[in-house]
Image (cartoon, rainbow, N blue to C red):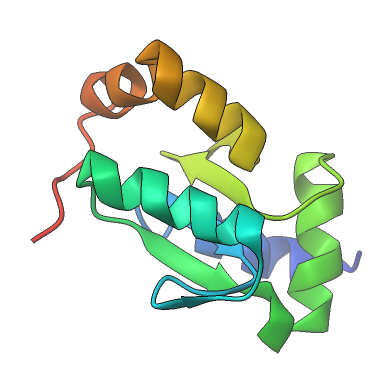
Length: 110
């Protein structure tokens, strides 16, 4: 991954309190895992930004190196990597994801 791609991903990760790197968009997810991640965030009612990795091959590959995580989707909260859809689901079911959003002061969706 080039320094330019890493810098761009860093800017994206810090552009919002919650950022989801996914396949597709929140309105039209392109895989089941991305769809599940969107459903969890929508259920939590938090504001979040998203990045469609299918639209940018450099970001699609670069985000895997950036987080040292091999799969997409990837969730970031306040610039910190949280995990993929399975981890999101486990945290959600345990109440940990809700607590993380509250602890970090993440804004509610409008």
